[in-house]
View 1 (tube, one colour):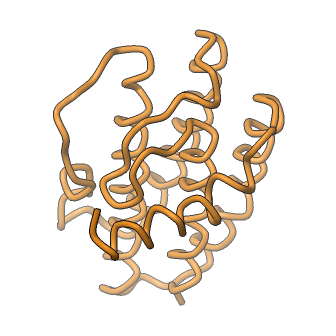
View 2: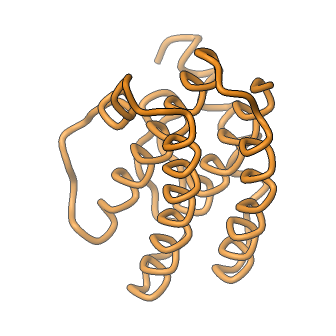
Length: 155
């Protein structure tokens, strides 16, 4: 393992795993649900600009990619891919991207509910391209955290 991989894996442990360690499924679900209105407020008040459209596209792409990874818990492994494959087309308007981002977050909440109903343990791990193995709970923390951090860059 390279030094950079080692550092990224340890950062993931601190940023994503530690905050979710020992949480119940109900708490993880509640936190993800609570992230929705805050995220919505962040992005709905932003102006339509090239930068904001690009940031929203990135947020949507990463969250959809994360969903695809998490679906492996019930559908089996898939071929490795990148978040770029899930970014909306360049001609999608800002308003449509905002709506898509909010729908994507609702889809994440629904997916977590499906995984809970299917009995998938929150401790099950799925590989992240940069951070290595993350638990299901950490993946959902990552989804919420990533979008909030990226949305803060929007004006």
